[in-house]
Image (tube, rainbow, N blue to C red; front, side, top):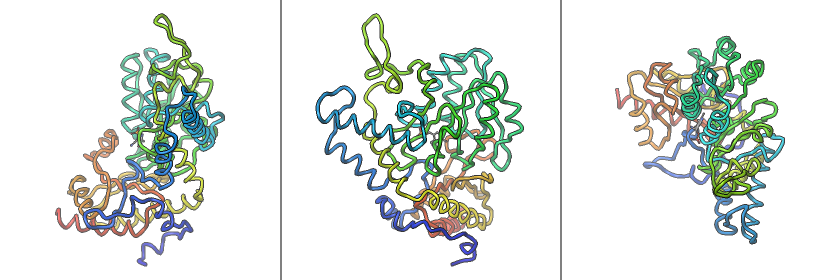
Length: 416
Ligand code: PMP
């Protein structure tokens, strides 16, 4: 054990046992054991999730809601049970407040198009933060352009933390919506959402949280958060791609007009007039990703079987270990040093382009992401073209972090 690992608090999380549940982790890439540090982009999937998808397609594949036949009823029941499981997982008061979407992006677009187009007026303001993912910038920009509303941005400091005194000044009587990332994908910062939501509430503004990077790491309680909308993607929390959730308060859902029209979202249709189904169905036009919802249910069950307290302690120790390990590399600078972070480490190496470093890491079987991480304003703020991002999950290990350090030193020698 080296000196670094001595300082890290030992945790009881049984990572080697957990890794056995993830078949994709057990493979060689370019002749080396895979080190998967691209969890911020998408997580790997446990066998139980893969089996849930397979069980649907091999056993009871059918379209939902409209069929009287046996398979359709099984599929409908499983889909609605998944909705209930999501509601329980995020402590939503009712399952009917859970809308299945194709991901965080779709959830935010739904709110921007349904609520924004209906309610925004010229001069109204939408408040975002300086560390938003493009998925929580562009949908608002589009609706603001159409409605003559304005974006206001809460700035951050050099540590990658939002400046609360500035937030207080920016959130005002014109603010209609605060749309904020719960956790930054580019920096790993856990934002102080309670404080900022309280500011929005004082002004009577609605609140949407982008939970894409929060749900893989800690438990969400939408009632305790006191937000109005919470959007996340299943694929970042062990589920499949193409599935996400938008949770919204019941009263809002009942008031909001539908966004997309089509099958399943209607009550009756004639060429003269269409009346709409109740929420959440009127926000789920067309055939949804049924297998994706079932996979999310399995992912939730997988998380439930883990000890959340131990998981969080393990992730915290990984973050601490990785930060110490990487900072011992000369010329390495971590971008984003917030006091509260998930195990995401964005960094640059002096004189080297992130892409070149990522390319060499891949040659040694290490998967990281390089570039702007769909957060170009963050890169502009730090005056860098991009970062190398190692985003860790609970199934990662300190040995993998040591491997990253070793290969970064090789990359430095090769590229310098
Ligand atoms: N917001 C954040 C903070 C994200 O990290 C991501 C995914 N990188 C998104 C939104 C968009 O998620 P998706 O592509 O799954 O819709």
